[in-house]
Structure formats: C-alpha cells, structure tokens
Image (cartoon, rainbow, N blue to C red; front, side):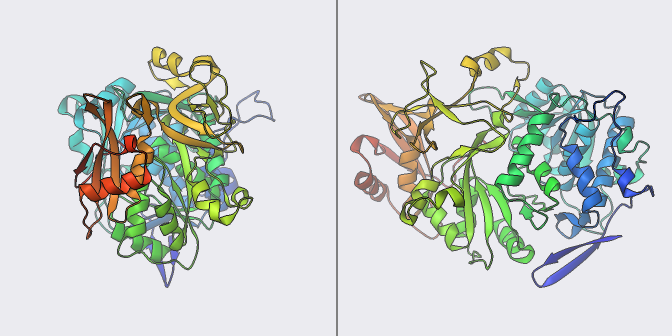
Length: 547
C-alpha cells in the first residue's frame, strides 16, 4: 500500500511502514459502539471522532508528510489504534491516567493526541524549551506515569524522575528505510486486540482531555485543564476561521505542545488536510517545503513571520498562503512585507487558558467595509471572538463593568464560553482569582473600538509606569522594529531614581545591517512622546523567549 504527495513538479510515492491488520469493511472498522440506553440525539463531543470519519472518507489521501516519509489517513488511524492498544496492554494506562509527551513536531506526537484520549487517559504536552528542573516539576505536578519522549530531549528528564516513569523513546528523525526506532518497533509488534469500538472512549464531553502548562512567567507553571468538548469546539472554530479544506497543506511551524498546537492537529484531520511535520526551525528548509509542497497554511509568532518574510529564499508565491500570527502584536511593516509575498496574515489573540487563538482580527469580508488605506492599521488590532467562543469583552478592573467602546478607555480582556479553560489543575486559589465576577480575567489590557473590535494596550504586569505616566512596551517595540535595520526588539522596565521606571530597549540588528543607539533614540524621539523613549539601548544577538 502506498500514499502519494503531489508537489509542484513532482510526485513522491512512499510505502507505508505498517499495513492495517484486519479486513473489516471501512464503514464498520471506524464505528464507535454506542452505550446501552444512550439517547439517539446526543453524542459526546470528542475530537477522536474526526480521525475515524477522515480515515473512512479520505482513506488513501496523504495525511502526514515527514521528510521523505508519508502515510495516508488509513495508516494514521491504524498507527493510532496500535498506540492505543500499546498504552492499554503493555503500559497499563487506565482512564484518567496522565501520559506526558516531550517531542518536537513529529508523527508520534500527532498519533499520541488521538491515541491517549481514545483510551480516556489525559495528555500532558511538555514545552520542549523548558530546562530539566521545570520539566521535572510538570511531570511530578501532573502525576504523569508514562512519557513519550524524543531521543534528543531525553536528557532533559532527570534520572530520579526517569525511574518513576514508563518511557517510550522516539527517534529524532527516521528516513524511509532506516531500521525502526523503539517507537516504530513497538507499533509494529503491537496487535490491535481492541478495535475502535472496543476502546474506552470518553462518555463525558466535559471530562479532562489535557493539562497544558503555562510558560510560568509569574512563578511555577500552572496546569490549564481543558475538556473534550472545548477541544472539539476549538477545532471546529479553526476549521472555519482558517478556511481549512481537503486541499489544505499545513506546515507545522507552531509547536504542537503549545495549546495542543492551537487545536490544529484535530482541526486539520477533521478537514481531511495534509500535515507537514517540522522537527526543527530551519527557514531555508521551510521555504523549500513551501515551494515544493505548495504549503497553504502555517502558524507562528512574530519572530517566525519576520524570518519567513526576510529570508534570502523568500519569493512572491503564485498562489495565496494563509498564516496565523500570535503571541504578540505584529508590526505593520512585516504584514506589508508578507502580503507582498502573497502570504496573508490573520493576527490572533489567545492564551493557554483559552485553548489558543480565541480572538481573530478582521477577515477580508469585514475589512472590505473600510477604505483600503486603513487596512494595514486595522489588521494590527486583535479583533473579535471566534465563532465557537462568546463575545470578547473589555472590563474595568475595579467595577467589572464594560469600558466605553471609544478606543480610549483601558480595561482588562475578559472571556467566557466554550473555549475557556475549566481551571488550574490542583490550584483552586489561582482558579478562583482568575474567574472573578463570572468571567475569565486574562491579565491583558486593551481598549475597545466602536465597531466592537479589541486592541491590546499591554500586558497588565508589563506596563511601565514612569513618573505617573503609563508606557506601553508594545508601542515602543513596534516603533523600534519599524526601522529597517532592526530585526527584533524587547522593551522592559528599568529602574530610575527619579522616575521610578524607564523603558530599556534590547535590540537585535538585522543580519547585514548596522545601526547605533543614537540612531534608535533619534527615531524614537521622532515618533514617540519624550517620556516613552528608551533610557538605554542594549544590543544583543538574540532575545530569550518563553514559548
């Protein structure tokens, strides 16, 4: 059995590693047994069901591409079923048990995101950028008993924690024809004793499907509890908002560990799309994949968008590529540069606590209501709630009343709805604090415009207060990044004897360019009020990031 990847100017055929074992007709193979007494008009919302449908509807269509390997939807479902049987029988995983995943964007991660909930266990995706003590903390705090780990990341687990875990090792990368790694060997040697209808899939859509840990910027990482229902609804939202279809070719530039990959692992399968794995961030290779596979979608932080836009291999595409950008507001000049390449951005806003991007900027339909010369400025705003989340609101922090929608009054972004977390795992105090007045308080400050769209002013804890004046670090960052010589900028609050705080600018200069602190300060003085200009400019080779 073979699957094929049709790329511009080439067709690549690759034999699958595994052949599904049973000959049950497709319409029965992927059927889930309904429980006795279950009413006919209600089925629990469970994203595992997306795979079962697509394995039947798109059976021979390419589901996954990883280097020189690929496999179709039938094989993805079979590999997932084998992993589920493996976890049940060889690793004794029971419903409710925690299974941690420490992998880059590799097929095993995708398969785990279906196999673990298919046996009603709980996923614990681990941030691959964390240090050993942080990873050990998350494993212990979550109560994980099994770990699926990529070889190069295995040293991040301390020997003490290793002794308390059952571990499945995954190769960093496998060429087609390489000897199977331990993970592949386990799959090959696992019989699908239990079919899909025999697995203990959840009967409660509000049950815990995953614990996703925050970056820990305010102390220890917090475990965000998300439900089957929430992930299902978020996946549906991404299908619609990202315009996913069977023709979609999605490149995994976004880490899958981050908010469950913004729920795209489920959304893409629901749409019958092709997922292109990316084990490492290599922008030369990214542009190679974009050109050869005609990638239609990707997601990434402003740093990713910046590198894609300015890479030496960047070219104007002869088709439209859609990209989501989140994590921080994007500078208009990067939006303009990507548009020139036929890459069209949707700026998103969200948190781990909201399953990822729950707010999207204007789409082309809503943007068409405004004059074209306003478009770049408008799309820099964060936007409206997605279709599966309730209205995003901006509330006064003291009264919990809505701010005036005048683009001036600042309040805190607050959310409720289907894609809002259930709370923090084993932390009722923090849960109570963030759910004050019946809404989830994000900690992000924003204004609301007359058309209902929100625009972030700053992170509540990151506002720089200088001589009684509030300074938005985002505004100063965007001003400095507006210089052609600057690649990245981060503004922090530095101590000042007179003013209390002053902005300090950490600047990364674009490769092949040069500038000076005086040039940056002169640019700021031309574009900002004097009190907003940095007191210091520090040049650095890179800016550390938490996620």
